[in-house]
Image (cartoon, rainbow, N blue to C red; front, side):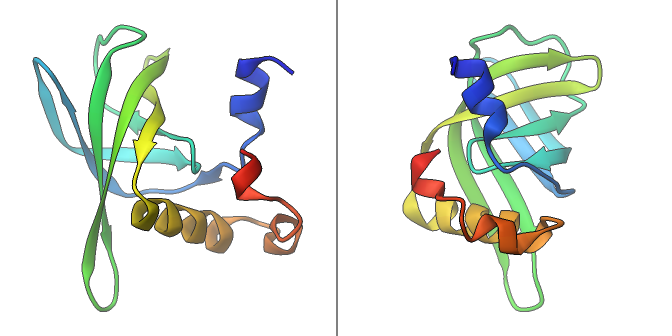
Length: 121
């Protein structure tokens, strides 16, 4: 299996939140997400970046008790008219745990994910 197939094999869910992308030369605030996995995110409204650009991704999650911000390091791996696909290159354990829970609770078939090992991603 090549890297692209492996990347797209991850459990990906439609998930709408706001986030920021900070590149070395530019910051985009309040952007919307379209989908999310434990390996990456599609961020909407990010114009004209190059493949391989590195950035810091901050996702803002609003809950019933506290607002949470997940912060990951990433790299642009897909360019689309509506935004960019960012592959997470570095993520702390707390953010990873939140991402796993988001995927689990937003998938159409959470029972199928019980057999899916996130550690094997």
